[in-house]
Length: 401
Ligand code: SOE
Image 1 (spheres, protein in one colour):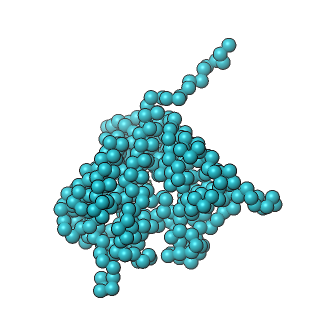
Image 2 (cartoon, rainbow, N blue to C red):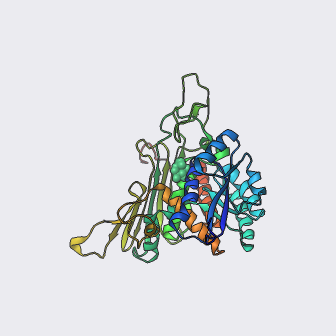
Image 3 (cartoon, helix red, strand yellow):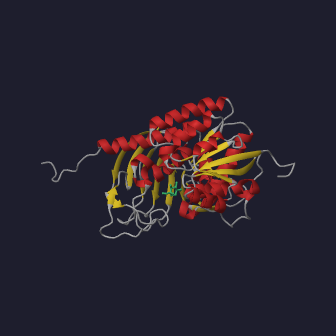
């Protein structure tokens, strides 16, 4: 590092699967495209399997390895802990890191329960008073088109928001023989599609509208009650070496969740999260309808934002497709010339940019743990509604006479 480089931000990361890979890319890249007050350094990565974590360190560019996350927290040469492990570990790691004076970036959802999220938020609130900050990794809000959507709603371009329509559709669990992983074990993941991908929709809806969700009515379904134990994973779901006599274990989370919602600003919403929508690979979509217009973001067309302005001239009325690559748009000016587009990984890099800038300015990065606790409360309300079937009215087989 040259003498004129900003001070180092030495990172220790727990976990090295999909999110570990995405976060590592962001730590390596952010300061090479954005001016940052601190220069991230990939100091150490932790994982229980030494061979696995050493291979990951080599591939992802980490300087050293640990086989226990606690060692990261004990190290004097680490300033920030990045938690990329399953949800059942988030609270213990985050609380220990903050109490040791280390900043924290924690993957979503914040925790597996409201109680855990509340405990994490209490410790983070105290730590912030001493200049130690925590952020939760809802990266989609840093996709330029979604960040533009938030800016346009905030600037009143839609008028008063009336309706929100959000879905997040995947299909990697459509196959009954996709093997049982931690993502289907409630004690590890907290929930299935709801917390894994529905949480992104809830955060994005609250972020874009600036409104909180006050009540929900939900249905949750687990189509495949048991899945093969073992079998090698291919991608997220995997189609391991499964035969008829492969032992199967219980799935304890939802495959799909649907819910309606009321917002504190008067809007109403409809949400869907599923991992069994055959053909939909990572279809995250958010539409907001207001009194003056509508905006729609579709991750599968992520460099564009659909905008309908009722005030357009009658012969020009219709959804326009804004190409969100001009330098005037959020984040885009630091990348390629307009029209060249960005991808999924850029949201993670922008997440590091905003986090490091906040740390450099000694200000609270967003979303804070308190923000993420708000999402956790919605997740719990959805599970409660679906479990108790509140507001679910059975359709009478025959019309009442
Ligand atoms: C799996 O559904 C997953 O990896 C989520 O856990 C991520 O948060 C999402 O960005 C992509 O899909």
